[in-house]
Amino acid sequence: MNVELATVNQFLADMLLPFMRISGMFAAMIGLSAKSIPTTVRALLAIFLTLVIMPVVKPVPVDNLVDVAAFVVVIQQLIIGIAIGFISMMVLNTFVLAGQIIAMQTGLGFASIVDPVNGINVPAVGQFYLILATLLFWTMDGHLAMIQMITMSFDAFPIGEVWWTKEQFQSIAEWGAWMFISAVTISLAPIVSLLIVNLAFGVMTKAAPQLNIFSIGFSIAQIMGLIIIWITLDNFTSHFASQWQRAQQFMCELLQICPV
Image (cartoon, rainbow, N blue to C red):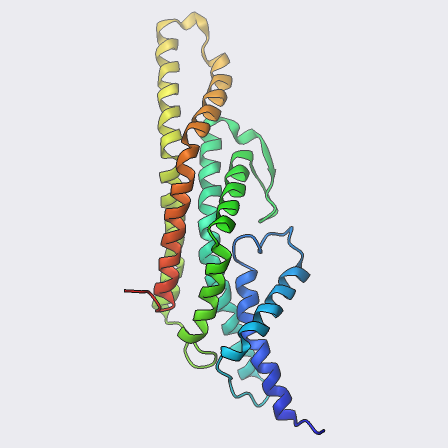
């Protein structure tokens, strides 16, 4: 049996181009982008998903896989996948940032551990919020939603046909602003509570200077910070659900598949 070179190139292109888009998403999305996840695992998952969706992806005529045009198309698919994963990662970083803000305000920032996602030292409170957010992401079937988004992206942005406009790139960059807004919203209640505690310390110091409140104020602030985190933990799920819903809505608008 003779197999023509054009047939082999077409098969490799039909597999390589979707694989690059899917692997780009896996390299940036929640959970799978952690440094603790072996690269081999991500690659095998990307290959498996590519083989599943290959029959529904419109084939792209490719004459040569080693020319500049094919390289540009590969980079385009990688950018699309990374951008979709980046949106989900901003949801996770929202709660990491909120935990860091709370830790610095309560004096708990001295306790830091290595973040397995970014490989840097972060406050323990931020790591605690990161674990909770990741578990909620898997619980709410966020990984299935991401697979659905990347599959629909092949209809919204066919390979080699449609590319994003500069307005869409700008909207992706502006999406990062929601991370800071939501992080401040989540940490607002603990910050205000600690502000009240600090004001109480100030009043006590003014009323009885001989007590030297500031010598024990640091320990009390840490204890109150833990209590406040425990009290406000009930709102964590609602904040994550709201932020994740906003992220899904943005991805739908970006892929032009937003339901009416």
